[in-house]
Image (tube, rainbow, N blue to C red; front, side, top):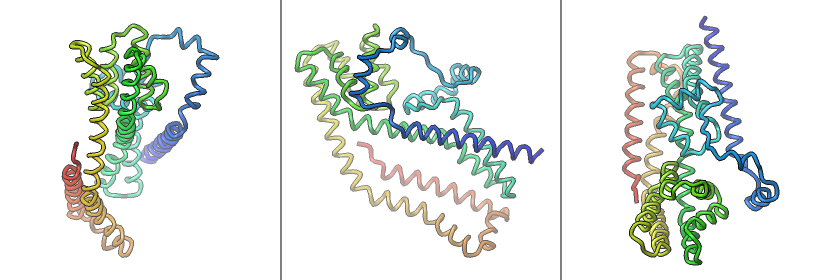
Amino acid sequence: MLTVLIALGIFGTILVFLQGCAALHRKMAPRGTARAIERLQKWSAPDVTAQLNIVRKESLSDIPWMNDLLMKMRRFHPLRVLHQQSDCRVPLGTFVLATPLLALGALLLARSMHQPFVLGLLGAVVLGALPAGYLYWLKNQRMAAFERQLPEALELVSRALRAGHAFSVGLKLVGDEAADPIGIEFRRVFDEVSMGVALPQALQNMTDRLDCVDLRFFVTSVLVQRETGGNLAEIIDSLASLIRKRFELQLRVNALSAEGRFSAVVLFALPLVVGGALFKINPEYMSTLFTDPMGQNMVMVGSFLMVAGAIIMKRMVAIKV
């Protein structure tokens, strides 16, 4: 029975690994042709089916019962928001199924190698957290790219307003000219407004899809201007200039705190490097930490203290501007 479980765990781990490689290949591959070619194809050969299907459908998994479970259970709502913000093209159900499979595979692999249960449990926790960690990394990368593009997009909207165009036309210009991710998000807002959604609701939907404080400032300023009046072009120009100055200050802070971050990395990696070197030189001497109950407790306490120290040092050097 144990052999069957080990085989199933190894098979599931290999399957998830291959799925992850395929997803990584799709992520790293270009999302399509160049923007100019896309526009030419759109105008020369429009897709009638895509034009008729204006109802937005959300699918979280290719498996029907998994899709229904993810749509109904509130516990998966934070994961759904994270998946939406990361704009990952792999269905959310793949990550949900990969979490227990990776954890079970790590645990069975450790038991098959006659490793202590503590190490197997630690490996299961680490591998089980990889899918959510990957989504969180994608989200951070996407939000960082969006924030870098936001000042130029706001200036483009401001120039469109000064030229006499409507605000929605400025959004369309950003959607057509800017690169992703800001291009696709502004294009979604324009499409929603074109389909009859109110502009405040369309802007609010964009803030729900993106975890960006500067974007909330932009949306709030637009909504307030619609209620009270004023020169929207000047407001947007001031906001774009403020965002640029904040980026400059953030880069200066990162340069000043580089020494602290490097010290944190060295202090965190030093025990691991020294422990690995000692295990390579004298395996019997280091194996006591993993075979003796007191050594296992020391490893657990030491790992907890290292993680706690890394979190504390990260909070000390992570200065928000």
